Image (tube, rainbow, N blue to C red; front, top):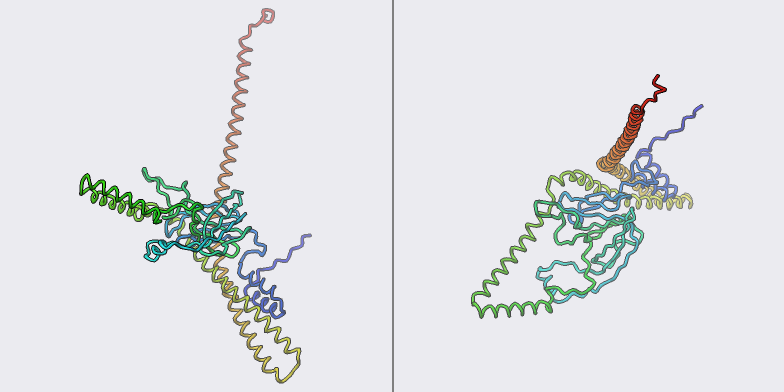
Length: 428
């Protein structure tokens, strides 16, 4: 005899609203907040061991480009807006070392910044972190930040967006074009995303450990100018027009080099439009998903505050009832009742908005996971099927080889038996 189990349908938004109101009226604030958290995650169990992942933005355009799932470590992504490639390194921070650096800026650098010649952010601290991916690979990243605040702490899961490495390039004839954003070194950290609080920190280039002299430092620039002046004087003794010719040639070569490096080369390094069009639709969905999640967080924060205020109004109403039917408290009781009803109406509207946004977010998650996870699973299944077919073919080939060797052995035995002479006493 089989007994059918009870099957409970998923509660709708009105059920959640009644639960939140009832729990807040019973002063069970933590349980009411847990109900709001359930509304924010449509179709996801509270024990969420397989989350959707963290949306990571392009460090240049700040648009959503990929999803960092818990099992992923290193992935190469392309931005459909700027058409450059970036490497995302996701994992837990094993160790972090920070050092506050001096904020003193030389006078010559302040002058260049004032004249808009150098637009460099001044770092306040230098950090060195070791990130371990789920596969066990550990990488060290050294960068600077504009403030002394840590972008993440030890043990937290982060995603470091770095410029495309040297191994990533496109072969166009004799040229090797790297889809790396200009003015960044290969593998240079650009942005750090904290998975715990969703905070995104822009990273600066860390100053070198050894004080390498720059060409713009006066102590280096003055000797170079002196050498150039001496060379001009010496060439003037040979030909009076030669210094001008050398100066024109130097300026022309510098202009051509700057034009090529600043204008032509960045355009050549960009990915072709047809390549990024494949990921543009998914990145648009992720951008919409990112906006919805931000809106859900704002509504959730406001709903949690209203739950606390509703619980306090209910507690205050209980205190007034406990005092007794005093005429002086009648107006106060009516005032508290009006405030409580207003909070309940506002809380109802917020929970309905959260539920609608969460439902749309789940739809986007389905589309993204169908585009990524299902295709990957189908590829793995196809690979396994191909491997099984190869093994079967190899087994058949081994059997055929054994059969061929057995047939050859039988043929050899028959040949030997047929070639043996028959004795005379057995002939008659």
